[in-house]
Amino acid sequence: MTADHEVAVRAGASLGEGPTWDPATGRLLWVDILGSRVHTYDPSSGRRAVRTTGQHVGAAKPRAGGGLVLNLRDGVGLLDPDGTFRWLHREPVPGRRANDAAVAPDGSLWAGTMRYDEAPGGGTLSRLTADGAAGTVLGDVTVSNGTGWSPDGLLMYYIDSPTRRVDVFDRRPDGRVTGRRPLAVIEEGAGFPDGLTVDADGCVWVALWDGGAVRRYTPGGRLDRTVALPAPRVTACAFGGPDLTDLYITTARVGLTAPTPLSGSVLVVPGAGQGLAQPAFAG
Image (cartoon, rainbow, N blue to C red; front, side, top):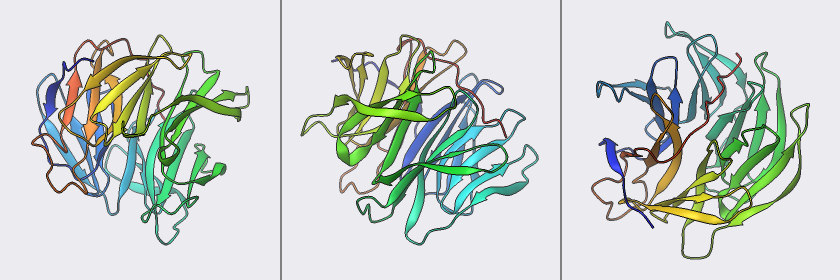
């Protein structure tokens, strides 16, 4: 077990999530879901910026043409570089909100949802394309979380947190996924798997909610590294920095009666490994 983190952004986010490196700007994107805020952080200057959204925001990802795609409570929207917002796919469901999202190798957005009350089977995982077409990939999800792809694009990894599993699928040439099976199971008492990222070696890094750590699993499902962190509710992780070698980690303080001083901050492990360049949304 290692504990070699630094503090990237000292913050008090209620539900920090979705760190994403934007190579076009050299900045880290992350969200506070329940705070309805999209944050940016420039590690070269230390500058930070915050944009408030009109509703809870599960994820913010760069777009190929500039701006952001937002996974919001009532659907998926596009934010242009000049600040103009428009819906790409609006589908409000009472009692449901957006959660984590990821961009696939083909530039589509895989957007997760969940119910506020975390009712079993109340969430979904959907695939959205640049023309606004949306299709449900998984329809019996409780807390849709980490999604990522292997370096060759042939495998997809996915987490529905209450299952305690990191699952792996085969990705077909048309983008569909089949053959769901467990890659790893998080043992009782170690927390729940939340967000994930995949490195250049094909290893899967998994944030542990109520586990105070990030774990790295090999492509064969073997645990080979644990990074202990000073915040129990670790939500997600992503590689960033000019060479994609720094692991950025978001945390939360929601629901904690005694949050630690760094709960809700963004942490970083410099030189943690070699990340993969993430595709931008094609819309």
